[in-house]
Length: 402
Ligand SMILES: [Fe+2]
Image 1: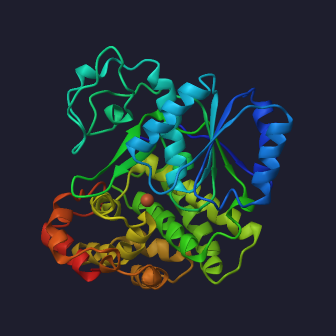
Image 2: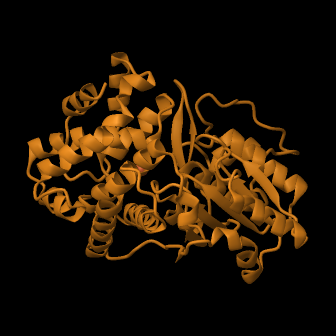
């Protein structure tokens, strides 16, 4: 059994840390930051105005990009091109947002550094489904991050990247703790693939409860269900180890204390910090031990239609646990009931997870139809799930939530 843990970011848990970003950059010797955020929510905050006006008054030249939705290779390429044109001296990427924003930030940081070393595109051996097959002229190779995507590209990243400072604003994916960035293209030829290297773990992850406060209830719910799924799947993974076990147990304990109260509308810095830590730990655990079949389903589902990742996890976790228990008992599900504070048995976890997930709806609410099921099952990996599940059993799980 390997006890090795993959690299982790330096972690800070501090209320008000985002507000002091200019000091943090100075402290770390960063002079040309690239800020990456999501839609509007962070920008509407007083904190954002304070940070950007402090940067301006200190004469720091920064670039500022907004990404909405899950990042596509095209979006990442366009931001990388803009950075190389407008601020080639950029020396850090500060990503402030949910998992998609953090993934975009990680991909942009890697891309800016990789662009300087990429060989001409004419040598491209494989291209993404649906991508243009016409090679770029060798004399003016356009940078394409797709070439470095796992399972899609022809090049392997070597870990070269600008440093990333990650400020999560949702307690969910744990992307601030992991070495990969998921890029996706949605549709019949869609994919969700990772840019992955231990070097892509953010340099610093900052959990600032102020950034989570006021998070909409549906986002808190879906994100939290993702974190809980990740903790449970790493905890029951065939690849878990005593270090992961300890961290997953700690994460489930924090989630069990904070999540139900956040769902009831309590919104204190203490609860937000506790749930943020649970999500961070879920990222550390999944990076070390992998995940199970709920996340195996998430890739083909997310590639086919636009459905929030947390919603996928929430609606499938209960049915997957029940299907798993039909194969054999899983003592760790019973233990998880105690850690989450919901009872003593696996059945209690299933019941509670299904009630937490009920408002996220069903696959049909996101446009899925019965004809999609075989495509999804064909694209589903069991990952490190503790038991084998047949294709029939996978289909039954999907039918339960269609
Ligand atoms: Fe996840």
